[in-house]
Length: 166
Image (cartoon, rainbow, N blue to C red):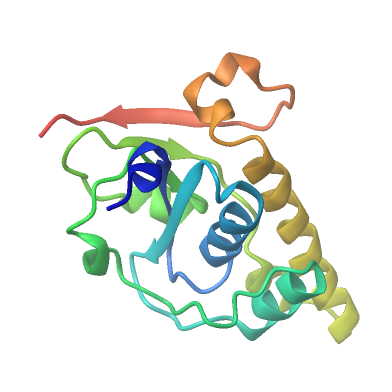
């Protein structure tokens, strides 16, 4: 591990299937904050990569096409500073992490679920784009917004709810 890697904030973005929202968050964190954040993503389940998530991230100039869907167990040898759950199911099912991992919840709508009820592909993609942009805005505030939530200037619920010692 290089000295630079050891000073970066290690953040795991956790979602149900690690196919869409957590992948977008990992992609944005690496793209926008790679100098201060070492991002990871995983799921409680493994659903494979969502092609529409890959597509809307590419539209924004972020390539996540080489990402792969991972189970949380695949990262069990890593210690994280923060675990950010980006969906309610992952929030409710979040496993206990060893070490000093602080668990933070910031939920985002589920684009595939919303897209399923649309009449056109363009309407479906608009859900993906909106959530992509919301995740980008959240990631732009990292890591400061989770280190000191009082510095945040939005009114989106952010819950820090667990702190574990090994």
